Image (cartoon, rainbow, N blue to C red):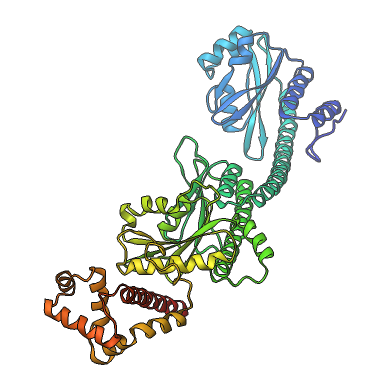
Length: 552
């Protein structure tokens, strides 16, 4: 009977049933077992086994007829050694009619074979082209004269088996690739779902730091946020044991050079890298959204602060509601203006953070190089002046002067409070007052601080006009002499020392002042008018410069 073959146009002595069983095998082990079973049946031999090449060795793949457990578990033959090893190396059949006297045996295999009682073997290679996939044995437990026909049958079984093994290998790799594709698809789908959940979580956060924590949680490693210069701004997450390194880095477009890096001990695969890419894009989007929100709030805060401090409020009810959305009630508070003796204060100055820490409910801004804080004092025990004094005695803030305005109970009070605080701060920066924290009451200018600047100038000129003209046209220092003279309680020697002039020079200047103004400095009423005018003059000077800074 002519059997079907896996190799076209080749005569076969194998049985068609064997080929059908071989083709139905689902894996390598099953195919090998079908083959060795068929060898025993086709050759009428006692034993058959197959060895597969794994690296440099042949290992037992399947067997039929073995009685020794040691033979089944310990058979392992190096390619090139022993009968089976030479068959695999030389890719041609070998036979042994009396195995006991065969010099090609190796010691371990000799003992295993002898224990099994095998005395004759026929071995063929399992060839696929020039590659030996393994070897196929037929064996007898007695000396046996193998015929050429039996070798042809075993060789054909080996050829059919080799073809099926290669088919199973190709199919297995194809299935493995398909399985990997499916796993990749499922991982990608799962990652997309997780990133969708991450997007929802990020959108609910109002803090970029929390958003970075969520990103690190998704990535499962250490995430670093650095600026353009490489300085670490914030990190989140942790890295496992091993040799940590940057395995992924991206610059966030539109963020002025911010860079997100992932630090881990293992490289990211394709799916992980895509997931990190998507999660980082979501983080960037939320970061830009938060930054734009902060800019909008900052702009809104600046506009509202300007309206509050200037009193230009068209709709008080609506304005109060907008203040409440910023966390400020404006029902009861005070205005604080802080200036630096050497230079201006910027919006990012540490003093702004310190003020916000000292007064949790406050709104800060910068006007004309001065820090302005509107302090909400809902707690009646809050002593604004005391808190400021304890803050400004610290080293970094000793060159600062604070002016504190009146306590406010309505929106209209804040413009007055600001005028008072600004005037007190400016006069304090020019050496008026002995404390770093001043009020309009301390300087005796409460009724003057909110008087329009032009009105103040008019009142000053009504009283001190002749002195101002004399100083301007002749270069005298009559106004300054009068101020120092009255501040020293009309003590001539102290005044002369403060002005660095002779005692008689002061006497002559005071006489000239009395003559020009028609006053008597010994008269209480005249002194009151002069001191008030001098305070007005100082106030117009600082407010004029402040307004010029605003215009600039």
